[in-house]
Image (tube, rainbow, N blue to C red; front, side, top):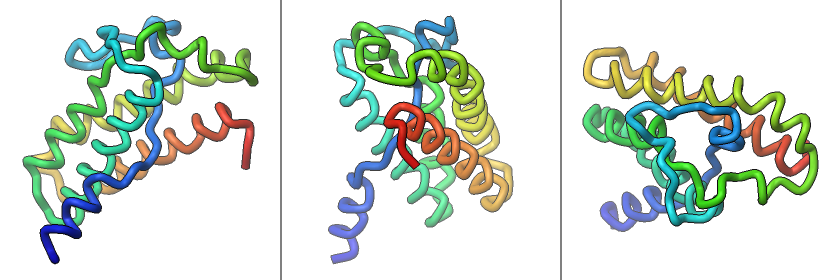
Length: 146
């Protein structure tokens, strides 16, 4: 039962960001700006899984898991064709705001990865909150919702 819950928690989908990273000229840490054959939805699902893995690592104090998940978030690939084809509304607002949001998300993820083995878990959790807030803000703009 415990193992099943762990697997289930690790596969629940949450949202993460990266919109217009390619168009903004942002190079993700670790060369993550590489183009992939994955769609935007597939990249977001992978990021969601990494957010869950990061959160579970924080819950359990698994510093290796925290470091790996954060590094993966900071270096995620750019979807095939970039994200511009997926933007149906708020294009100008998204293009203007995303570089700052993107830098915040990737900066927090890189900071977690770099300090995962030594920083207090509470400090790492605060950085996780920065990532989640950036993701939600970007997704709200993308969907034009509150």
